[in-house]
Image 1 (cartoon, helix red, strand yellow):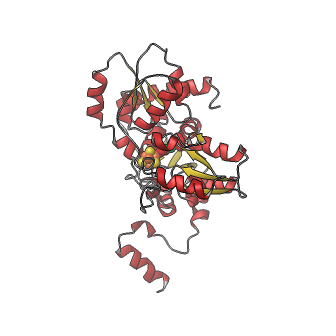
Image 2 (image 1 turned 90 degrees about the vertical axis):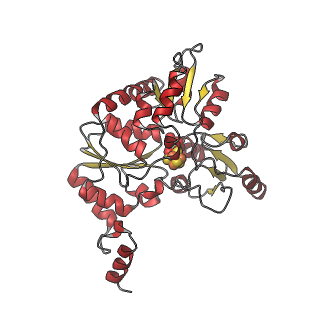
Image 3 (image 1 turned 180 degrees about the vertical axis):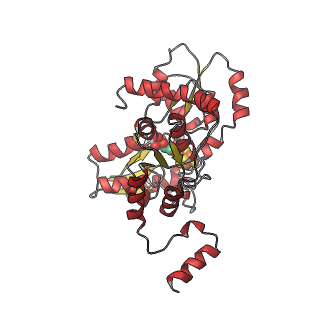
Amino acid sequence: MNIAEAKANLLSKGFLDVDIDLHVDLFQEIEQLKKHKNAIILAHYYQEPDIQDIADYIGDSLGLAKQASQTDAAIILFAGVHFMAETAKILNPDKKVLLPDLKAGCSLADSAPTELFKQFKAKHPDHVVISYINCTAEIKALSDIICTSGNAEKIIESVPGNTPILFAPDRNLGAYLNKKTGRNMLLWNGACQVHEIFSVEKITRLKIRHPEAKLLAHPECEESVLAMADFIGSTTQLLKYSHTDSAQSYIVATETGILHQMQKDNPGKAFIPAPPNNNCACNDCPYMKLNTLEKVYNTLLYELPEITMEEDLRIAAKKPLDRMLAISKAAGLIG
Ligand code: 13P
Ligand code: SF4
């Protein structure tokens, strides 16, 4: 099969994103487009390795929000999921914010529908609402402060101890934070489908085969997995720990994309993805992995798809985000 036939074959199967000359060096073209259009690529650690490698900044949700709030670029291409690109738009109304695939959603954000959340909040009018950044702009607009897994403890500490808190949407992160802070936050019953898939049994077996390996876990994991972990943190915190810690091997209980940076930063160490509870490879986030290098190229070239938002919603959603950024700055978590 020659290149033209291969391309026609792929197109006939609906892979429209490959409608790019197969001789094109996507890395080189993307670099040129970035320069030519004054564009920046912000990528989350869960993106495929090629996208991480052409990004201007790779980070966790806190780092990405900070970068989005400080960039001078005219165009932000967000290689991540919808709520992340939306956050960038909330912070940058005058910039063009692009997301390579608008279907890149998030099961956690989906677990908090606006109307149900409004009703829940109305039943607890005395509660301060802290929402994890993995939520829609509508939920952000209904919140008092936003947090990420990298700053949640500091955000909670900023609320006086006698003030009740409603935490949404992640019940696992909420329960973990209740334990860490000694608070008794009221939790919305949401979860991430990727972080709930890890199998305690399979991790236990892996630990028996690799007794020297430390278990690193993201706080979106279930309590049973967190109870086994040697270190718990946001993706950036897990990456930093794997770099400074003296162990030589790790089992990693979060989305597999993070292993790319862990391996790059620590070529001599071994990183083993924590297994899901069946053979589905569900420890890959199906939303994050909708973005491809081809889509990144097309998105930069055509400046589509773009994130747009009603101005009223944007202003309401910006307030709790600004509070998060201010508290994080005061706590020295961001520069
Ligand atoms: P962090 O990168 O902030 O740890 O978040 C993980 C995540 O689930 C993003 O969707
Ligand atoms: Fe959402 Fe989970 Fe995917 Fe993160 S890993 S984007 S929380 S579904």
